[in-house]
Length: 170
Image 1 (cartoon, rainbow, N blue to C red):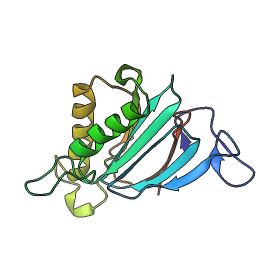
Image 2 (image 1 turned 180 degrees about the vertical axis):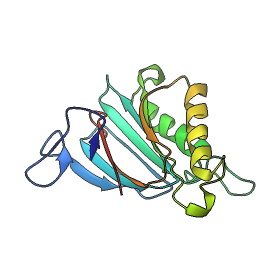
Image 3 (image 1 turned 180 degrees about the horizontal axis):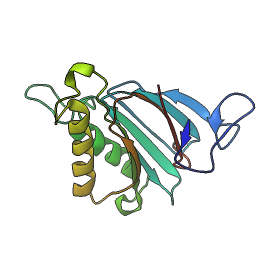
Image 4 (image 1 turned 135 degrees about the vertical axis):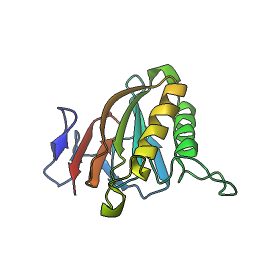
């Protein structure tokens, strides 16, 4: 597993985290999660994108896993869509006490995992990556790390209490 940060370790009880008492949570597509508690949040990404936000002052973090970049007509306001998910994630962190100017972002996913689409210049994974970058730029939130694109799905573990992330191909 590639460690995007240097201070994460496998604990004796099998949990991945910086503290033995890290809680575990699995994030499904179309979901998001925020906490000030020490959670290790795991998700699997193909063409979907995960945006991880962390506030180093509050020690709070959140993650969203979205499927499509933008809401389509009559689809409702669901975090399955990047523009809804990212804004909702920001709102939830602000509700926890974060300040937007303190937030740091990490991006993961956006692969082109289906052979038939690999020749296309603007495949779904690339659209999802572009949506995340554009929305975070609009919100003035810096992207401090990313592992995006390519042809392989990824497993991601994000630690909401310290902002560290592990990613590997699956």
